[in-house]
Length: 197
Image (tube, rainbow, N blue to C red; front, side):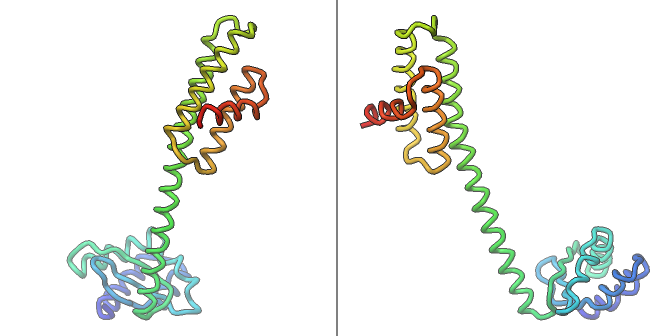
């Protein structure tokens, strides 16, 4: 790897400009080659130069030179440190970052599912109220109230245990029924609880 790097370095320098890029290239040391990834490290104290090597034009030029020299597609990875342990540490960080990213994505999916489920109920309540004839008459609003409460009870059973976001969206539906029927939201919630037992 050191030999390959030494051979391509003069050509890479011819293709770039800037004192920072040259300083970064001079400081960089090959660490390892893993699969198709050529790992280039910068010694501690010079890691701020890494940005010069990660610039798209510089990175692509180095990858092109490496790929030509090693007869295959090679990608470049620039890390802090020049020891194999630094590469292992970087891989562990990558793994942890990927795990956190997957957790965040799963949480987002759950939130979207919960929101869309309760959004559907919310829209059904709006449509049901819009379809109620003579809304000013208390008996008609009472029928809407009865149907709306039943709809929410069934949805709550279907969705099972609610997380914090689910509870907020559930409360939003209760508030909508309260608004349409001029019933206090606590009474609406109490009637839902009674029907849920």
